[in-house]
Image (cartoon, rainbow, N blue to C red; front, side, top):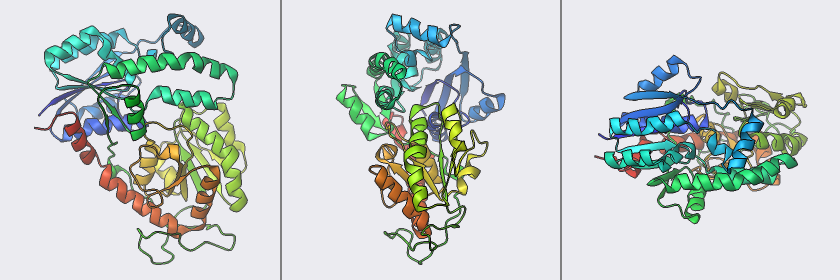
Amino acid sequence: MSTVLFLTRELPYPPDAGDRIVTYGYVRGLAERGHEVHVLTHRSSESPADVAALREHCASVVRVPSEDSRLPPTARKLTRTVLGRSDVMAMFDSTAIREATPRRIAALEPDVVLAQHPYMGRLFRDEAVRRAAREAGAGLVTNAHVVEYTAHERHREYADDRPTRAELTLEIPRLRREELAAYQASDLTLVLGDEDRRRLRDRGVGRVSREHVGLEIDSYEPAPLPPAADGRGERESGFGTSGDESGCESRAGGDGDRIVFFGSYDWFPNEDAALVFADRVFPRIRDACPDAKLALAGRGATDEIRTLGERPSVTFRGEVDDLESFVREAAVMVAPLRVGGGIRIKVLESMAWRLPIVTTMQGFEGVEATPGEDLRVADGWDEFVDATVKLLQNPAERRRLASNARETIVDRYAVDTVASDLEATLGLEE
């Protein structure tokens, strides 16, 4: 049995957002494989019940106070700009956690210290942390989740307003410098996609390993399948029969014309995806399928996202307590992302829920699945419209893709399977 200390920017429970799903899967998976797992995290708004639930899998969960700046956001950013520091990397800067980390390493003598995100991985640049790790014989590992500076580069590319572009122009080189320094200070960097692995290797980062996301498969109740129209095998290629005379099936194992998208809109790629889809793509889908409806859900919505719900055939639900119920009645789940990096957890979750999916090349990045068999991957908006319309028209094809998607998740993304691979990567095998 080995000992692993996780450093997290927030409590990785409940697993209801992308980064928490990733971290919780690793915590639970390693614990269930017999390793002693500890978590050191910032104290935030988590409930005692959430802490207690995480402690079921951990030998200890230690929280240290977050240190919120008393400066207004504009003044805070200006101060960091003058100091030449990245505002993004400074968001989770904490003297308390910097001092607590070497103490926990000395007390636990872990085999591995696994930092979640470069925000926490930059602790490995601190001499007291490095000294404690050397004395304990601990390896220092950072899980990037997503290479942040590349996402910010795409944000600048798509930003409509000059102030945002100007702010990003200042931020990106600082973020890139500090983020890469965190990876360079690590003995090993984990990424969730091959593109991120290539990006970091091109930047001279040393050891980089691509890992999968571990999902609790049993917690994803499969959605009802549309009825089989032609009796063919579910892994057979090709589209099934069409729907009604208009070409769009009105009912098929749920709401046959309902398209859904969900995500945290305080992360730019999700906000951008929802706006672009509503503006450029959904109207064209409605031209082909007049009864099509778009339902949006997720936390952190801006006013611009909320007002999408005022458009014809578009509803915005905000943060929903039961995401599974929201998505189960969908005909098609879309992930029209223009910014890649890491992996899109929403795509994996939708596959686990047994939903037919249409996504972009960027949305597919990091997903180990087969385009055309497990989901549709569109190269450009014309292809995205065509793929979505054809799925709305063909319940048999929706059935085939959804069935295949669920099987792929069960085969490749179950917590124990992923934890076994992670165990080997970290050198924790007995």
